[in-house]
Image (tube, rainbow, N blue to C red):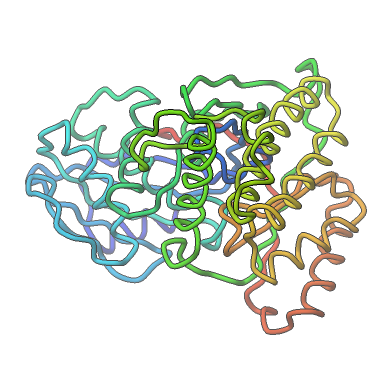
Length: 395
């Protein structure tokens, strides 16, 4: 945090009452690409993320400097939020916009934020959104519970930023606890936090985060197209079933059963059948994974994560050549229990559950194999080993 304090003093001087907040990044071991269809998901927060250092401004002005991105974001919470500027500040504007739907905000913030990892695949956007929602709530004396923080951050990303995702990312950032697996039904927002096995032993793994060096914004990929394909798959099954159709925007694969899908699978256009196939098999993997986790069977849990990535490649059809290569390397690396694309699978990183006693060998092996295939990323590829953590909170 020293760099944040130094930057704050440089930009804003001294004398303010300062608030510190840490908003973690997240990974989803099982439950990939199903939250926007109201599926079942799992997740962890881990001990890398975004640090916030800020103070209140009674004028309503927001001035936020990022040490990770260029530019100073400025606007006023007392005024309607204008159109997107197509930069990182849109997430701050979006969080403000979402809160303005229910609250008359009076107090702004000035401060500094800094991320501790490259962008891509670990939900830095959700960490930024959840942290800023909590920052604005703090200075405006809004008593938000955890589900409200998730709601406003999610609304900001969907309705303002324009990424049609579910609540997985925000739920992990807000709800997770160190050493426990978050399990959530995104149709109802009901969730549980499960310790590993009987809860008496420490976790037998650390998280390996393997950044490919590829960076692309999700709003410039097929992410939103995949959401549309899933909705179309659900609508197709409902039509075959003769069920009344809801508006397309309100239609999701959770509205139909796996049995209904299997009955009509061969009749559907294969593109849509693959999307539905991923949804239903992934929800089954989540249930099997939670069972393996509660039994303390890390090998079975990891195997399901590998299977999840296979379905992401072949049924959901995401993954760049770089990410697919990383996944293939992880599969043949000793000491990796399981791994897959992190995030949407169109950019960024792969994640893995790693035997901590083999970290050095794993790093050498993965780096060597990957850069042999993609030497152009030698300066950009990064590998981190991290531990699970609690969700976003003030320090």
